[in-house]
Image 1 (cartoon, rainbow, N blue to C red):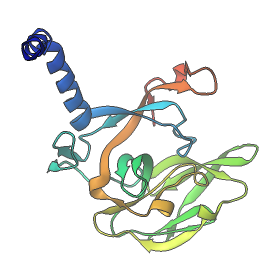
Image 2 (cartoon, rainbow, N blue to C red; image 1 turned 60 degrees about the horizontal axis):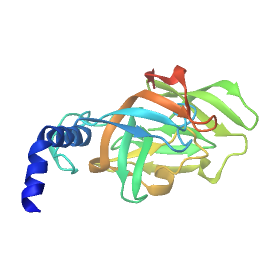
Image 3 (cartoon, rainbow, N blue to C red; image 1 turned 30 degrees about the horizontal axis):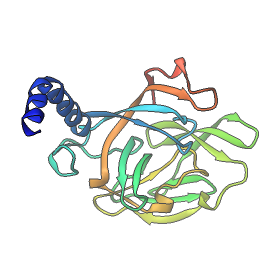
Image 4 (cartoon, rainbow, N blue to C red; image 1 turned 45 degrees about the vertical axis):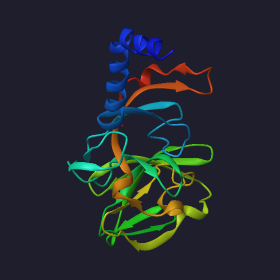
Length: 216
């Protein structure tokens, strides 16, 4: 039996090497991440597959969170992927507060370091409103409910060293830092800027052509 196993490994060593290298690549260099919920609407839709740059912030030992080389720190406005210890799963959110920031939210409107952010309404839906949030130099879309949730107000809070405050763009439907607390720097595994492709969960999982290589 042992001889047969050795023979099988020799016969398939090229394939096995390919699989190992692919796993290392996905762990430490780049990967894709599916989005099962609407917590980042309208920016990211359920069924989007995000391209994740695993080397955006750190070069890590494959299959671990151990950083070998620090490349950069997450910046305000960037979409990050992180392995949340508190939520016990991988999450996708937007960085709102960096270390030292004082963050407050009143009726879904942010105040950062004493500065109130500007908002421009874009779409008025049946029960939601989509607006552009001007996040101190980074403009992006958010969605709020006409009847604000209990998450619509918090703070002021100060972001500690080596932590970040991250929110979903769908502000009243996101379990983010308002629920799980600040995000530790070493939990953050990558940055997303592009949708690789997308499947429409409500339409037989058909591809959404307009989402192919869509920039976030």
